[in-house]
Amino acid sequence: MKKPKIKIIFENDNEVVIDKPAGIMTHPDGRKDEYTLADWLKDFAKSKFKKKNWQDVLGGVGDEGREGIVHRLDTGTTGVMIFALNRKAFTFLKNQFQYHTIKKVYHALVVGHIKNDTGIIDAAISRSRADFRRKNTKDVFTYDGQGDVRGKERSAVTRYKVLARLKNKNGSPFSFVECYPETGRTHQIRVHLRSIRHPILGDDLYGVGEIEREKIQKEFKTKLARPFLHAYSVNLKVLDDNNKPIVKTFYAKEHADMIKVLGELK
Image 1 (tube, one colour):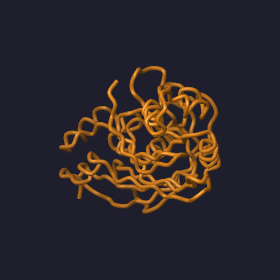
Image 2: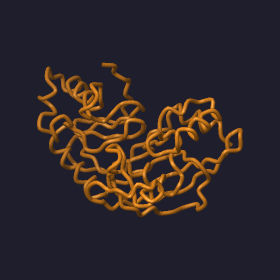
Image 3: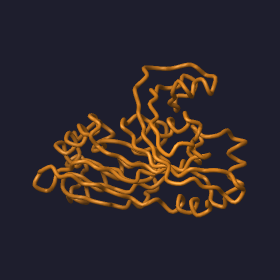
């Protein structure tokens, strides 16, 4: 399995924070046999603590197959991710995610000009019966003409601020947006931006249709190979080397492909 290069932002004996590259899953999904961040964390733990087996470090730290993982980013999403290296750190971090005390900031490049400079998207999210991969809001159900919900709706809130309204060489409009999710639902930002009719550029699952997507790609030199969504910063408490809680904010700059696309816009 191909092992991508992972940039480490911060590490101690309790946690490790990385700048996730695009194209790697957080953990196995049961359908593909490929290297994931769960595998990377096992390799990292063995090396850091000089152990022959990763179980000597991460055994029992969370769910089986997802040891040390306290949150996830989608395969195409880049940016800040944090992992636990022991049970105490896992519980400490997991509680912060569960009770929404962590402040996360994402950057997204979306199709169209968002009218308002700031806004709040308050729309419950549930699974789509038509496609197991998809999550939806009622607004998207109506828009797609599906109207079928599988499972329970879960409340979800995302605040946003427009950083820039841009156009490409053909005059097509795009917006560079900063998003602040107040909840942590799967695909939340992608679904919410779609629900206000401004899907993330490059998002095949929640974006524009295939014909429109091909048209947009022809307007860019850079290949639109993923959703242009980036986890820019995370503010939370971590345990220092003396196991004392300290507040830290971790940042990751936009990756090269997003910078190239932004460079094609004015």
